[in-house]
Length: 346
Ligand SMILES: NC(=O)c1ccc[n+]([C@@H]2O[C@H](COP(=O)([O-])OP(=O)(O)OC[C@H]3O[C@@H](n4cnc5c(N)ncnc54)[C@H](O)[C@@H]3O)[C@@H](O)[C@H]2O)c1
Image 1: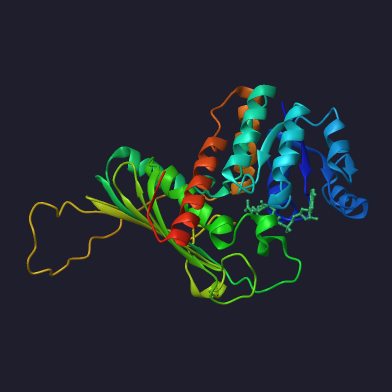
Image 2: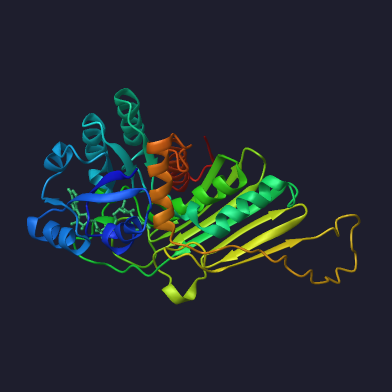
């Protein structure tokens, strides 16, 4: 059995990553694509040999063969398109951030519940084999109690006239909204904690656009750990490593280059039993990292297969929209904190 998919906003990340991933999925079939012009839609249709191309959402949603839609349009269109899709009884995989605000996202969720359709969020990084492994290690208890986490995602993103990401009314926010959300989600997903207190230093240091190009936020998880997320649009791509670090009372997991669109990077896991006494000498002895074996695949294929499996077989949704809404509340709390200079409690 295969879920028959339609793609809304098919020529951006959908074309770069998600549709190629979908083509490899065992339980999914691309049926229809929608873009803003027929020429563009037809180009994508032909590239992937889909059955039909549309230049508006209403027509795609009238397509009876389409059972699920992947919404990968600019954020400003997410809410309206998701609500329409739910009312047309299509299941929905929606890109991050879910909508311009958490409140808009809640409206989407409400409609999906009323219409009885499933919805999942596009936090693709959850499907990285190392991130799954990190979650497993936390659950095994080997790391002790998690006390500190750090997530970093940056890129070089200069002023581009007309770019929807650079205007608040079409993106909802800048580096934190676009990239920091992945780090917040990964920290909460891997540790199982939820942010309860948030503070942020957020602003524009380098470019002219109105959304932030710089964001450093800290938050405390409900399980006590202190976390730091840095997301910047003004650091050259090659200059940052995309770090994800989790420290516990018995060790650490240090990932580098895993927060990205291609499954790769490296992960060092250090478990130390050297926690019995205080070493006043501080003559640190290196502990060899544990060997962590994983098989890399295509995260986008895994994402589509996972949600298709939820549709076909009731499998638990790997990225529930409730989690994505919570991430968005953390982002909003960070913006509020940056504005007021106060720590915000969720
Ligand atoms: N999962 C990931 O790895 C990943 C990576 C990048 C972006 N994203 C998310 O995907 C979404 C799109 O980002 P992008 O980088 O592809 O942007 P993009 O600008 O590259 O592509 C968006 C596409 O949507 C089309 N579009 C414009 N208006 C539309 C409308 N009203 N209805 C339907 N389509 C419309 C555009 O023509 C364009 O082809 C965002 O939510 C973004 O955060 C996810």
